Length: 484
Ligand code: JFZ
Image (cartoon, rainbow, N blue to C red):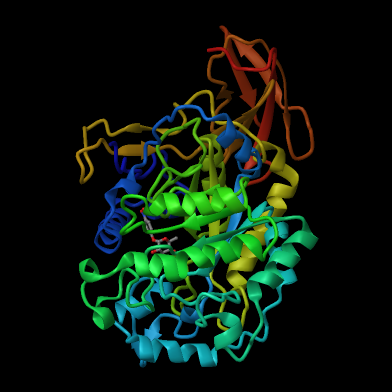
């Protein structure tokens, strides 16, 4: 298993944007993330960053068609944890907002009381769908039940749900499903199949129920998790995907029981990479972008700040430029970007999240052709290079020094060069055997000066650069596929 190729720094420091990105990709922060991830999750397999090729499966490819086209989705982490929002009994509870019950070892009897206070009067499903669409996102994935065990939907399998246990009494998943259908956007459900801190036999809650290895997992799986997954696949129209997570006790037949339920009820529904058995696509570690391109379908779940569930104290938002870079980085490597928001207990998506998403969305309105349905880079040298000094990460893999000046995505006969910085000299198009026909800016179709010198194709980009956040130049070539 190849794991944790570190991404750090840049070879061309200078502007503030670069400095900020360098900070983002800083070695220390990510080592911390890796360590924390290990301690909390305890399943190192999911950290694999280099995506392994799998034998082809035509049925899976068919299910994946929309997913490969979509590229960009909205993740929503919402539940009772939005009320404490990172604090318990007036004390700061460190870590992810949705982990507050675990971090502060809150007894079920106490945590449950949050349900009586969950009254998100400002919740409006159409507004959430509109945000996703304004952002240029093509699918939504919402936490139907997170590790705390509370379901956002009406459930016969457990009364610990939005309709039966809160004053709000509305099935928010139903409202969201209807709004998605109206808005023409796909909806998928996150479902925590293993961890359920509310149930005596679910994984994770050892403070109320004792050690996990003494539990009767199948009692919980048969009594709650499996019936709830059935409910999700029967009451909410077409389900784009089920996003299982943290497969702690998914041994033997257990993951396959979920696969059978999904395939039986909705054969087109995708299964993510964290069920505990092979899914339809690979899920990378949270916020982890692989170092190189892959033909496999894969997805990065990612935060805009540092938490999934809302926290009042996390204001460290990624900028629109950083999000745009990550999106293009991911698409140029063949993946999807599932970017998260954590609505408040009132049902409001934090304004900074909305503003950032809409700014990227305006860029996509003009430049989306380089993203939706676009294939990966035929090059790779633009992505980065291993440390020349032979530096290694915690696992002994070479550190990769990421380059962040430009990325390439492709469609038949076209290369899309997205520049995140102004090239300081004519930009040399990596050598290809195909004849180059013409070059133009995607945003306004204005021709870009293209010349050939000693067999090298050079682009002379206008300065100052057209769009300082990201400027896309389309290069058309003879044939459909790049020959190198
Ligand atoms: C899990 C959850 O525990 C977390 O609350 C959130 O929902 C996130 C999207 O998923 O956290 C993980 C799961 C897997 C990894 C890291 C964090 N992993 O494989 O690297």
